[in-house]
Length: 375
Ligand SMILES: C[S@@+](CC[C@H](N)C(=O)[O-])C[C@H]1O[C@@H](n2cnc3c(N)ncnc32)[C@H](O)[C@@H]1O
Image (cartoon, rainbow, N blue to C red; front, side):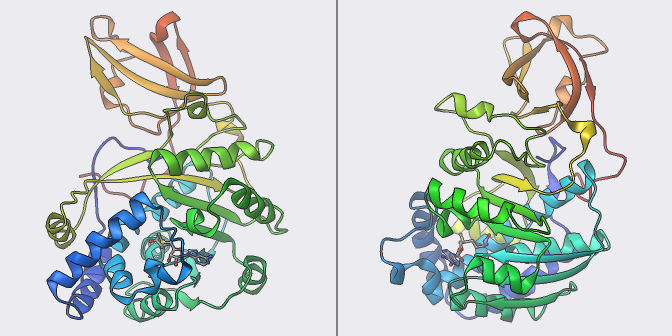
């Protein structure tokens, strides 16, 4: 979860590099071909979860659909991993000088761009291996990252390796599934088998799953987490606790980070009737070092809602999800922060009365600054 209720800016140097790639590939197809491909992609991704009955008909194996994916979904999704890594940096620290990433189901190297930008800003060396079933995607990944202004020892492959073979070869300290676990391991049993295998890795790499913020995808991740309750993720959950959202069938836990996307992406979105003003996603991050200071703390897991003379939010606690409110008529110096409350805020301690009336809270604050500029 990201620590701001405010909109962030798309990093300028990243935007310039992505615009060059966008323009290069735009010249390979007509505007109609691009919009038609994006209109075909949306239901395949959003309604069918990217899983096709016939493997040979998968969108990743169609050159036009794959290029269209790169031109639109890459800029939309590329910063998600970077946001999460920065959150890890701020909450737990990251005792590394080099990031060695294995990106499984890398597509056109979507996550590389955000991670490469982030690694540069945090002064980390980067080595990156992307793997995908689709040669078309790994070829696009290779061609487009050739012009990357960011550092990185990069490689891509699409051989039919097993994940354990890839891990042995790459020796990653970060294993990433960016919008791909739902396709690589569609059902719960496949996901739990995979995570079991990853958690048994000797050098305990960070394991990061990022999924769309839909109810279906987010609940699948929460179910996966709850299957391994003895192993606490580092984020977004702050200690070993069953997911509070799973107790209500209609609920789910997801992130929403407002962002001003580049104009050329907004223009393309308008042509296909898609307006994106936020990055909406769910995630799960495992790693070896926890921050004991955060154990047992609570986390704001909703927006701040305003209605009937009061502000409200939901927080995730060790006891489950709790309703918290501040009545405007009773606001005082301990609760007047509420209008600036952010999704993801961490409360080390809090006291509330019956009906959820907040008395006070102790906010956790990082010693360091986030890399994401608030607009
Ligand atoms: C929705 S795309 C995500 C691409 C990229 N990671 C992103 O965030 O934009 C899912 C990717 O998973 C890949 N994929 C699906 N099943 C796979 C499998 N069994 N092995 C390797 N890659 C797979 C697809 O080819 C596709 O590139």
